[in-house]
Image 1 (tube, rainbow, N blue to C red):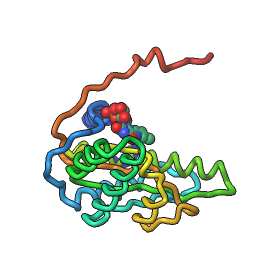
Image 2: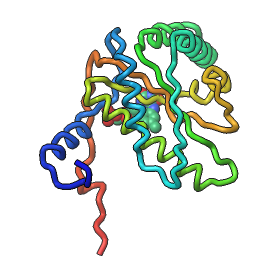
Image 3: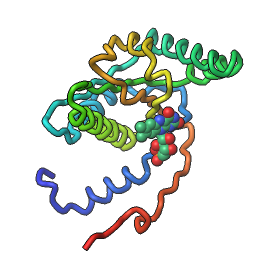
Length: 193
Ligand SMILES: Cc1cc2nc3c(=O)[nH]c(=O)nc-3n(C[C@H](O)[C@H](O)[C@H](O)COP(=O)(O)O)c2cc1C
């Protein structure tokens, strides 16, 4: 379909993927093939992007980096909530099969461009999530304190003066899928004369 034309079968599939995609909190131990992630990233980059800045960068974490992020997060949680909370976090985070960070270009002297770039990265993450969902891979987008920590930027090899974290994405096969609700469309739509 090249023109965005009327194709009922495609529309139905798109509707289902959008409606059924859920944030996945609990994963099985299996890691999806990297080729699927690579394809999802390529599709992510087809997100709308004012001024064609392509502000997104995707940072795929390997075992060493994952382990360092788990350590960092455990340290931060320990500092804030104590040792047993820190070790519980370490245990939980150590079970996450796939890790991908997304960063956006920062334009410190152009607030409008920075906002547009951040928005484009959010659209890219949704593209990625929807594609992965359609091939059976679940994603959780996280923006916890660790993603803003200088040591996190160091681990990504990203200069926080130049780029900002948009999300740390966990991915894998869902161990379970939570239910969600949304407000009826009448609650969120205003029709103006
Ligand atoms: C920008 C952004 C940040 C998020 N950060 C977190 C997070 O830190 N922890 C978390 O559990 N979920 C996070 N989520 C996922 C939301 O909690 C989730 O999208 C919401 O509960 C609705 O569920 P659904 O995605 O299944 O529709 C984030 C989502 C977005 C868009």
